[in-house]
Image 1 (cartoon, rainbow, N blue to C red):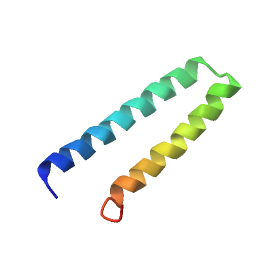
Image 2: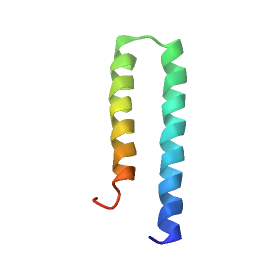
Image 3: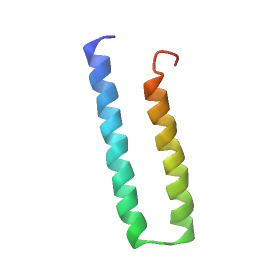
Image 4: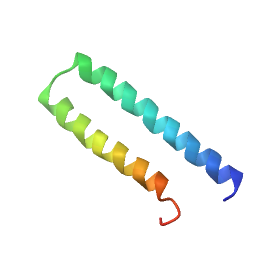
Amino acid sequence: MPREVLKQHNFYILYFVFLYYFYEYLFKFFTIQKVKINFFIFKFFFIYFSYAESFSVIF
């Protein structure tokens, strides 16, 4: 795999990790039901993208 592609993948991982922690930070302050639902949807997508990254050969 070319190095540029790997760098791109690493950038996306860092970006999702940043979003995850940022969302968790918001979640502590706003315990509105709507935010809770969005938070769990985001967690699902975060896990999905982590697995997609692991099996990047398949996709």
